[in-house]
Image (cartoon, rainbow, N blue to C red):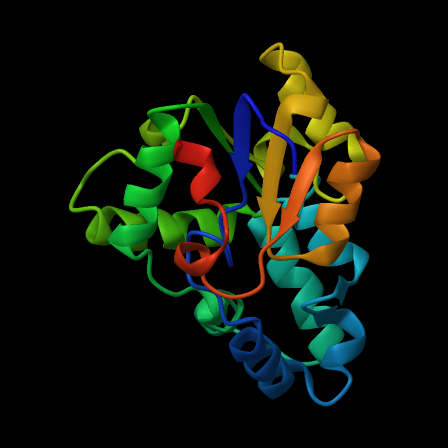
Length: 207
């Protein structure tokens, strides 16, 4: 990787602990064995894409899952299954972001949705003891609020264009290989995080 002026962090799997398998198991309990055709970590049906780009509201997502299940499901059961993946936000990872922010511009870009955001806002508020999470970044972008999601190249250019960033001098960090490849196609440098952020060879960011 070359030097960079800005860093764009993913949220889930980079800063926030995520267990995709927990949601896959929970959805299997609601939808049966065919649930893997609708949602997995590496692929998902248009229903989930539409939720993540804000094209549908949570109530339409709930109804869509009821239709897939072919039987009544409560909103609480659906939200519990869908949010099962969400873990904690280790404070040490935010200290990492702050070290980078002392030397470079930092941004957040997350594929998420209204249901998850309501849940992880509460988790993050507890873990950061009320500190404003979004204020840790120059700007924070959530797919359902901007109508764009990774790995489509438009979402990366949306961020770089809005802030006058040179894509070639912007580093994107994500745990999803497809998202990393999408960023590279958009002209950004990109690092595929495998493991914990705190153990990644990224200390050059604050040197």
